[in-house]
Length: 222
Image (cartoon, rainbow, N blue to C red; front, side):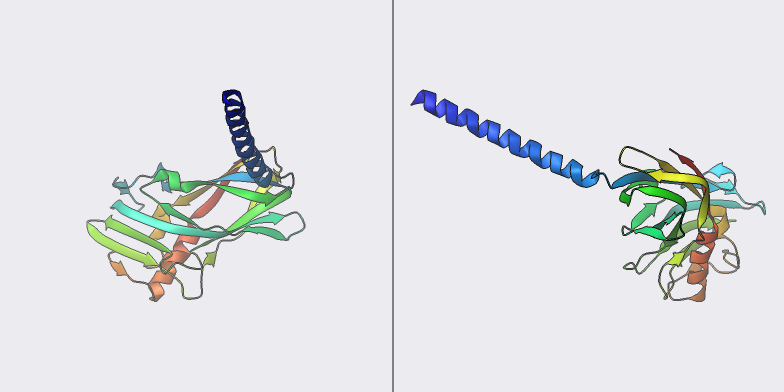
């Protein structure tokens, strides 16, 4: 009986191990199923020519000191432009928090295999009521700005890679973008003119537009 019990116990362990191993293999097959690949998206934040951090003073083009105490914004509808002009759109939404650098780096998976020439995405999301929020001070005057557009997320222009991005299961490309926060203060958006911007105002739409204009494509690693 003891020999039978030990054998049954060993068989149970083997079955459990095999089941777990099979589940892991299925997960890998779903992620890298031979028809899709992944890409790492990285957004670098700057203020002018300087690397950006919250609670750090920066001097703008007018010689005024700017400090961001907090800020965040949403990215969505990330589109990879194919060589024939059509595109693949990723369905995920990403909230980037300026105080948490890790949120500015994320993986996009299940991108169909193929060659791509550029990228486009949107500021905002289909479900959020605030697309962006920034709080700080400029020239000792505080600002509290919310960005939102009633018509939905605002798309960037198409950023051309200047080369071909090839997506495949065994590739691990990285796409570097940048956002210059100095560009937030443009088109009448400055504490000397208006210190608080709430959603639903024309100024809240200008905040989103300024963010779109602040974004640049930097380079690819592949």
